[in-house]
Image (cartoon, rainbow, N blue to C red; front, side, top):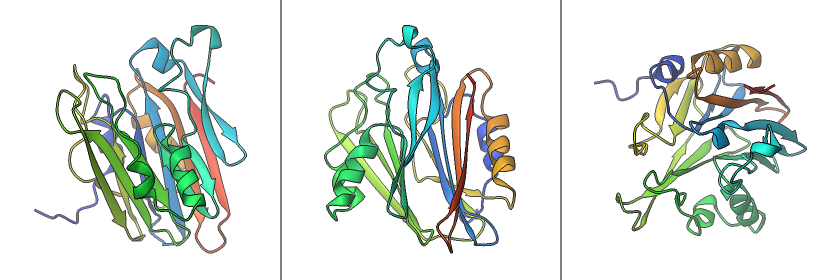
Length: 237
């Protein structure tokens, strides 16, 4: 078994009808660019009624049809926010919690000790978070239920150096189900291809399940200058 194998990200997506919400962090093979991606999927009408909208410091989710918005509590938030030259990406309003702690000089781990998984039993959707540093290294975290009853929160943080051509993929669910099974283990090690921002976004979008995909955000950050390119793909355009 090769524990250092870089898995094919497109194949992982194509083979899974419902990974839920997902974060990818990594680096291009030439070692010059940090890669960030975040996508959302949905099964209910309320979850599918969303788009990504650009903000000065990142993006936010917004109802595509405000008249159909039933419960905004777990679906309207800022998934991506800039913090200095760093970048926060999460699947919920813990983005703001992490930023508030970082502004005080406190680490992401401490911020997430004040949060837990989403209160949507029996799924108990995990809160997943990532923090990209200016040098291309990154942290990933998952907060998930310790048991089927939602009795307590298990917290895991993973810290990675930036390695050329290597990324990690963390998503909320193993696959579709009822209840939906929570992601298990370490973030999946994946290969980051040497392609343009647009081609990488297209690669991800084309391999997300057609019925369940909603929105995708991709950012390429030049590690030398800190400048970046970004793109959004919305099913409801």
